Image 1 (cartoon, one colour):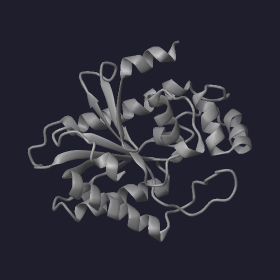
Image 2: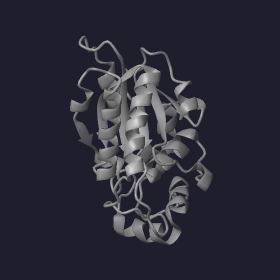
Image 3: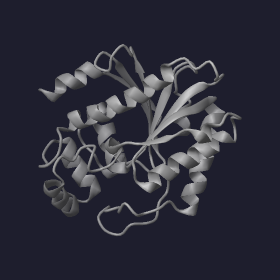
Length: 245
């Protein structure tokens, strides 16, 4: 993530950090993380420190936030905002954290949970998402369609940042806090890999920085992102076309 920060665009370009939540309690089994698992003390400290670091290093102020409705994601967002407040004097901690169903399952990619869950329990998280991006699972959206839905949500967060704010002297950063399965599929699809292995799996508090060029419409925009020290781009229209191929 440190190397990713160095690859971000000029300060006048708003960006979105689409991130996994911070360190949570350990789960037993094949990656079946229940909704009730909370952040550890270390995870809470990390979220605060990371929020403060981002503000210091990028000189970007958190201006809006969306999150999975699961508590560990909401807590991650709140703690990152609190960390950013250590650097900026503005009351960023009063930003409303908007809960979004597209940032949790079922919601992002699962259409029929009764069809999908048996496969998840049998395969475990990594193999399940690998099967999903290959479009071989029942009860799921087309992987590109599902990712486009999430991308449009991020695009709308990005647009909020593009609106003039005469009261702020700082550049804009938006947070979107979600889960490992959603982020892993998102990265695979926008990268055109359609394969997910253990090495590709996002760590807790790891995320991807995204921003959009040509914001006249979502369909006409170009997606830019930085993931694990590499910068990429893709046309949204190319992803839309691939859904029907």
